[in-house]
Length: 460
Ligand code: PHE
Image (cartoon, rainbow, N blue to C red):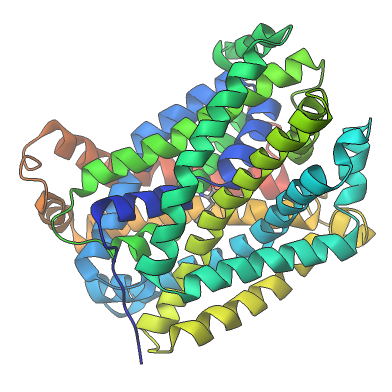
């Protein structure tokens, strides 16, 4: 028996898609990538990627999903015929692999929430060292990640309106509130303005090929693009909704959270005299250091609330990641939702174990032999997923341009949006999907593959 749901309201879909987009990508990954790749220069290129490439890709995905009314695999197959279903498999694979490592990082954040609220984390004095030891303390990390996966499965097994929609309606507004309150606090600290300068005043010499690659990959990751996630969510959208407008709101919400996360982190980094380019541990180190200076009670309260909200944000993303393969088995294979979700959750958790053990405890997973720059397993998988996302987005644009056709896209977008045909927005979407995305994304995804696996230090 298959059970297909739909969002009960327009705002329900927007909140769920924004909930998918807003996650660890915005609060954990965006600041550390910006910190390592040129600060304001990174932000500038990131915004450019969103405007020129990502919003049209998002519009394309939602339109495919709503038109076909099926999961990613079913939609590509229905609109393009036989072989195009493979593109759906690509997305299902991406969802599984991303979730495998994402859940590990979510487990770290969940652990930090517990340690700050109920433990003595804030009494330490070297937060960098604490982080290093923490992620290698396998017992608790195992339990926290498992706990996170179970929460994801509980919500998704409830179905669309009851589970996914209800969860998002509460979590999103809380996140904005606490981010803004913390930014106000961080801007009043000494030397905060040096952080603002680093983050907001672009310096041309900080932009290089890597700034562009990482900004592009991050933009796709952050907006949950390139793997059929928004095709799947789009399939639950009703015909009276305006897809272009929804995509603009979702991208705006996601970008604003990433922007605010940077505006919180960099003033803190500079006022604490820390290093912006410290990589994946950045927010875990900087934020806890800042919370520790707030005093024992305030630090515990504010720090606990903040990490709890990061967990909420991550949860609305893990929900969407598992929904992509789940929808495939529910729609196409006609399997019961609960069985599908719990089996997938178990499988993905196991696939994530090497990432969990890659932070030092198993040396071979900490420095992958034979891979350029010998990254740890978790970073390697994250890089691999980035490539899948941008190439997936690129192939989707080819699909719309050459198979489904731009005309069909325009017809779908005109439903629920009477002024669309003949508008400037139409020219922008059409130009981006038929030219800008295929050209830029195919060149850049090739370069990113060469860079990540062989090194591209010879470029610029
Ligand atoms: N966009 C999510 C984040 O920023 C991650 C994600 C990627 C979710 C791809 C779904 C699909 O955290």
